[in-house]
Image (cartoon, rainbow, N blue to C red; front, side, top):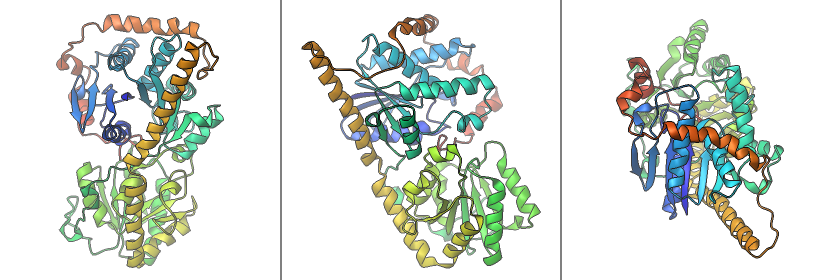
Length: 477
């Protein structure tokens, strides 16, 4: 089967495409499918126009035009659609029902209505973007928030099938009227490799941020982007841990969206426990295993919010795959990965005293830490292997393929078989497609130089994009 995956942004620094779409694409290629991943690398413009192959997956970054209000959005959307159409795909799989991927999905939907294309349209959602979701975190304008909220609901209800990363998203799309048979639960997973089981000797780890050697101290790891919880709660949890384990250290790996790490440092100073904090900040992915190996326990605080219920935390998966025993709030997908008392410890959300108690319990019981860490690693690597998860996506593609074969065969014989139902009338297609023909006209000359493209970014912006923080699990682990 020929599959075209379309992304909202490029592979970096944001993470949906690199930690969800690309591993899925690799797994599908291993099963004999032909997969291309097509993206607009606006978050990393150095990749503009670049194409390469990775583990059999064709990776294509469309050329970014100079930024013009509205026109540049239409040009990028048209280039995504045109590259996908050139592949003559059996399936178009759009990752996120918003932004460029959402616009591309709309174009394919309108092209399907009059029968101009036969490709099956699948939409993937791994976060809630609208009210209560990323609209509350990202610095969008009021107009952008309304647009993205509408676009998300439209995208979730217009397609041949949906893949969702969490049980909460599955429930939400059911509530929007999408038939359960069209919704496929595909949580985030891992790609098992020999590196997944590598052991990193703690005694060899050096910490560049200070001369403090704390490898002999009980170490609590917080691996985070900070938006999932109130910083004050983390400080209170750790303060209670110190009451019982006064030699403990808090190792923080990660950087907040809005400088929340500075608030953490300030609160630690106010509580007079700042000397127990080792703040590393963002580190390169290949450096993470060393920090994971230094931890005795990892904490994963998670407020009970809509965005946390619907997201599928890649960072939690990373910790468990590394064999780090975890204490986490029992919110959303956390309970799908962590089996309480078997592959980690779960706490009722907001119960700070219980959370601290579980951390203390693990710090004092080396045998329990070892058992939970070992089972966490086994569970993630065996039960959330992308090879297994890809089988669910194949099932979605197969059901669609069988349906359309039945539909087309019945139609040729004069039988009445209802195709998938959609909400908008087909006469709207010309109204929507007209701006895209305008975009095509402006994009006929494809050979835009990278220098011309980068004129829109000054040097500090480019450096920030190149070395900047990856996103959440919407943004990378």
